[in-house]
Image (tube, rainbow, N blue to C red; front, side):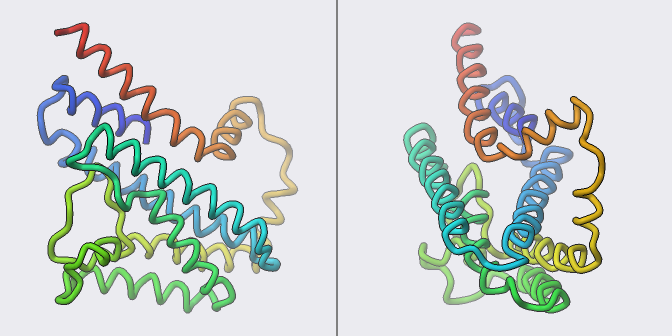
Length: 222
């Protein structure tokens, strides 16, 4: 994630040729990272609420993600008004979380089938009648505004539902319980785990820092 954002910033300020992040390795890497974010968001939803839905905790988490998504929209609207983020990864996670609550009690095969259905829908998109800006987050529109981060529900709801379904299978099989009983990780893994527990803060902080550093380098270069 951080490597992709750094590469994007270097391209934006002319240190790398245009199209670097929209082709080849970086194109694939961006999609793998987005897919993994949504997949593990689905897993996390089941870990948090698979044993019983805790509404207050869910609403707190949802409010935090929604506020972060709004902050990204406002910040990019100011810095990159022509390509601001109106439905990026955080917007997608927040929306998928709401949908995920509705799917939380569904059998795992149903959630996996729904994930496959979303992917199948992506194969036939765009669809007529979805071109109004209100439908741009669906991913079914024929036209939509360009953005530096656009993660619509089709196809990106699929990895979320897959994570939810597979987490239910793993939980029923006792996998998470066995992992919880393993010895505490060493210092390196503990630091990585800390980053995982604070992934939202890392996500929000790292890009302004990288953007500012590359902007400063561009200014100094003249």
